[in-house]
Length: 252
Image 1 (cartoon, rainbow, N blue to C red):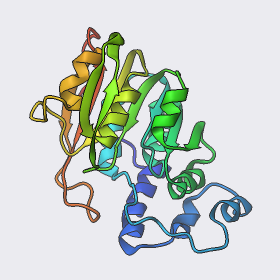
Image 2 (cartoon, one colour):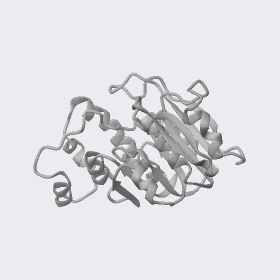
Image 3 (cartoon, rainbow, N blue to C red):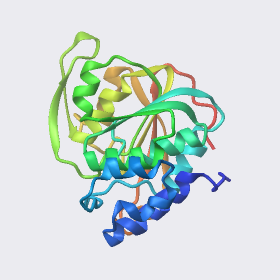
Image 4 (spheres, rainbow, N blue to C red):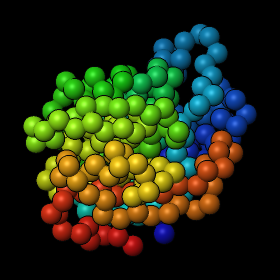
């Protein structure tokens, strides 16, 4: 079993309660490792409340990903949908990766990440993912993300191997696709989603992975409704690797 003494296993459980009550970010202040002055500077004088659509990482999700990725040392990770930072910070704390970059579109998410993980080797960037990915060519040993479920679908043009390709899917999945192309040669991608399989449309991210040289290597079902009380939806953890890569050896 994964040790449950980590800071972020505790925080993600706390966030479920705080979010359900619409509580202030200060309700988890005692778990924040930064100085009071930094807390005041980040939050400001006005009450700072979690947004209604707060991202949180249920303990079951964090534990599943740590187990899936255990057994190998990775130097770097990218989370293009870092939300409040708990998923990426939890993986660094569990020593799954040594450092990371977390992209946070909303300032409220960026504040939360800075509050709970300011002392970790993670660069928290308050920006939308697409502009950052367009201006950076960094590669990562791990790309991990839990984009919001049920985002609006859109069509986006890609050019894998110089050939034009239109992919239509939810915005979050399109961003994950772009991020997955930044994997190192033996890198691993992790996607948390309600579903990710061949039943999706022919133009979906899943069915177009092969055009980018990627493939789904495994899909793990999560426990029933791990996202309560915010949602009753279940979910999966999909593992994506480059085609031609040997099957990942650490699956349980």
